[in-house]
Length: 351
Ligand SMILES: [Zn+2]
Image (tube, rainbow, N blue to C red):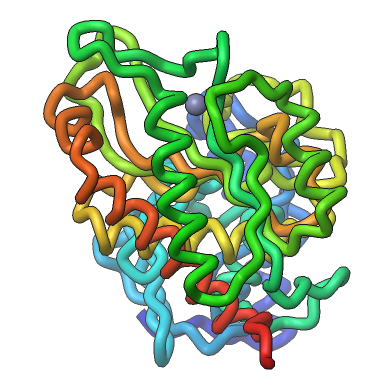
């Protein structure tokens, strides 16, 4: 569907119509949310600032087409394809799942996305070489954080007698070897089976002058043995709920800005690149680029992500994780993601 341009007079008519629409439509919104339009482009819905996706994506030259009118909207650019869906936090960016902080909302004849999603998720992905402040450091030193350790076993698969901490360290050591071979300096938060408190992990990276921080984990879920796949987390931006917080719930941390938020644009580009390359390598199920205010992500001074490579609670995926070849693939995927991030952001070191 072509984008709808209108002059001043029809714009006023549209604004009046939207006003009427809002009054009629308020009860129809999920979760009993209310909306108060301030213009046809921007409005507040249930206390969240929203913007018209067609206007926002249009600025990047993307053309909108309904896959299903009123439900699923596709945007196509020269090298970018995005899909968003009414009342969903699920979006697709170039074939990969990305999770919105707030669900997209159908209104008038368009889909609206939250302004934080527009500015903190899509804008950096559309323009990874953008001049964000502070600039992304050139990648020379990479901090690798193998999750858990010592008395903290991480998640377990009791039937197969597996501890997460063993596999996080194993993948971290494989990744270190790969990155060193490629000329990076690597700092590890641990190199053996020991307990390191979470804030200390960020501090190790900060003190070592790391340019990136990669935390490696494996996932599990209770009583849902069928769940499997790969997900990557970037720090939740300020004024947004984390992925695990439902739209109907309040996120107590949402108002806070942490040191990790200084790198919001870079975090999301790094997360996307790593999720994309790990999925490409493993062929695992895409659980998406997600958001969380994990302790290790909050206090790192540089672009940082946390990778949940697979589910130890899924027997089939756990068996794969038990093979060295699969763990090599995870490490290679992460390393490829780092290179893709550096290429996209112009932070590849030159000799
Ligand atoms: Zn973990």
